[in-house]
Amino acid sequence: MSATVRILPSGHEFDLEPHDTVLEGGLRAGYPVAYGCSNGNCGFCAARLIDGEIEETLHSDFVFSDAEKAENSFLMCANRALGDIVVEAPEALGADDIPLQSLKARVKAVEALSDDVLNVHLRTPRTSRLRFLAGQYVRLGGAGGPTGEYTVASCPCDDRNLHIHIGRRDGAAFSEHAFNGLKANDTVPVEGPWGSFVLAEDRVRPLLFLAFGTGFAPVRSLVEHAMSLDEAKDETTPMLVYWMTEGGGDPYLHNLCRSWQDAFEDIRYTPLACPGGEDDGRRRAWLDLMQRVREEVGDLAGFDVYLSAPEGLHGESREFFNDAGVAGNALHLEPLRQG
Ligand code: FES
Image 1 (tube, protein in one colour):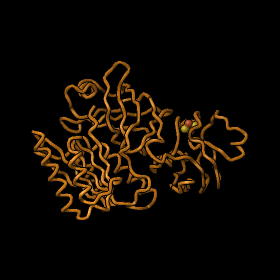
Image 2 (cartoon, protein in one colour):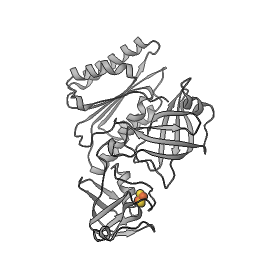
Image 3 (cartoon, helix red, strand yellow):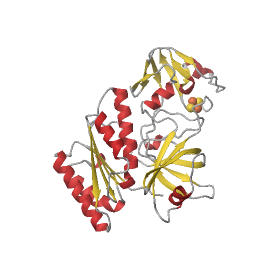
Image 4 (cartoon, protein in one colour):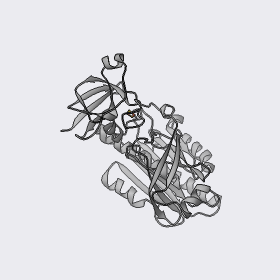
């Protein structure tokens, strides 16, 4: 039997599968509920049961005060619902509410997405997951070894999995390490998250994404996060994804984007090739892309725009979208995080 959880004060709702803890269901739905260890130790996932019944699934030594017990406090990571419940629980309202964390992740796989892009699949420890918002970035490495900053390309709703897209880049220490020696079962220090390239909490507008090269990483995370939120709310958000890459051929996750488009009629994906080479060629191709977006979409004023591209393209992009009527707080710009 599945159960529905309603969170106060946000009013967010999600379904739980029978084996889900309240925390697991909230995270899978994409809601930024507070948590830490996922293991009944830290108390960060404490919530109040307002209505309904719950059952402990995990013994915990965490001790609530008498006042907290009297308010029906419980740990979301250590309880499941016995039917529909209403709880009061803290949720992050924005990037500032997410604490800085340090943990050690294990490399599950290093997969070549193309000749010049790797996907590094990391798994965080069961007792020390990374709490982040879709679109944020982390620092990988350290402890005297190579380091680099990269956006998490996966959704926070994807359990303990972190996917990182790493482009080949001479002189970037972590990129060279990833292409030359990183392998399954290695341990990678992870610190973060940082960044405010995240979905607006109160978003109601359709989403327009423009990505250049590995700038697709935050776009993937945001699209998958928006999908999981839509599923929890039984809604659909129109999403347009334009992805420009250099080097010829399809973008490195072309089939994933095609599968989004095939599965959801409100998602439209357009791959574009950039001739590459000199900076001016890249700039002209990007201006052509924005012009094409305006011709295909028409009125852009009603969109939230997320643009992830080299910083050198930001100035003209900002001018273009301002001229097209996109409000300042609806335009989100992110540089490439390449190490
Ligand atoms: S997340 Fe640490 S006790 Fe629940």
